[in-house]
Structures are given as structure tokens and as C-alpha cells.
Length: 230
Image (cartoon, rainbow, N blue to C red):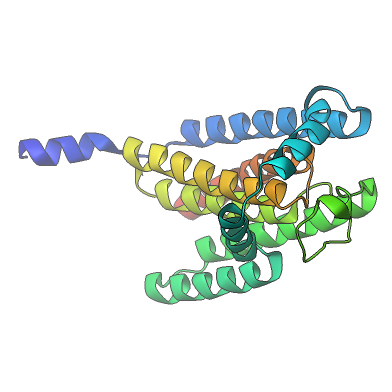
């Protein structure tokens, strides 16, 4: 084996059962911690909740035309309904090109769970959005907690990355996945805050929920992989 082949072999390790369990456990713990902190902040105006109005006021006072247009573009890309169609198109192409059903189905299923969870929790908690005077039109009138745009993008990037790198694990893929997921989620969250559609606790709650959904996906995928191997 050549030196180059040896290095490649070292960098592409088997994604073991132990790694899956650690990932699922870590994701669940992170998700619970972030969501609980966000929920408490939203209900009691403590911790993160103390920053809700401060961040909104600061954002409103620092808006400009260029940033507004960028934020509108980003939030349009993550709009739940068009985003769902884009994901469906992606999974169809993925299924055809790779000739597989499982991973595309898991991806679209996780997005559906994210959308359903967001819609249900909005009704349960009935947290009001920031006042319309602080919003940039078009106005949004439904409930605020959590952010549907943010959870959709976060779940897509986290689950998509996991489904790709878990089949050919490498440290490069792992850190690349983390970086892309963080950047994409942060951009969407910032666009929602900048446009005045959400409070800080709304978008952080969505991140927590996304990690919880990732944990569930890893567990389900772990069970599937074990069943296929036996």
C-alpha cells in the first residue's frame, strides 16, 4: 500500500456503533439543554429571555438597505413550504442517482418532523411575535416560538451531513459538516432576528429541537444499519 493510500485509509474510518451512540447521546443532551434554556427564557424572561428585547432594539437601530435585502433573500430560501419542495426534489434526485431509498427517506422524514414539531409547539405555547412596528414587511402573524425557518434549515443540514459522513467517516467530513451546519443555521437565524420576525429564544429553541431530531435520526439509522448487517 502506498503512503498516500495509507493516509487515506487512516482518514476514512469506520463509523462504529460506539460513535453512533456517542453522537446520539451528545446531540440529545445538547438539544435538551438548549431547548430548556430557551423555553425558560421565553416564559420567565430570564437568561436568554433578558436578551430578547435588547437584541431586537439593537437590530432595529442598525438596519440598512443592503443588509435588509440579504436577510430577505436568506429567509426566502428557508421559507418552510418552498424549502420542503426543494428538499423533496433533492431526495428524488438522490434516490435515482444513488439507487437507494433509506437515506433519502430519512432526510425528508426528518424535515417533515421538524415542520410538524414547529407548527405544534407554536400552537401549544402561543408566544407572540415581536410587534409589527419592529418587523420589515411582509408581516408575519402566527405565533413565534419556535422558528420554523431555523429548525427546518438546522435539521436539513445536520441530518444531511450525518447521512453522508456516517457512511464514509473521516475527520475532514465531520468538521466540514459541523462548519456548514453552523454557518447555514446561523445565517437563517440571524435573518429572522434582523427582519424582526422572531425573538432570540425562538431561534435558539429551534436549534435545540434540531439536535433532538438529529439524535432520533441517529438512533433510528443505527437500528436500521444493525438490522441490515444481520
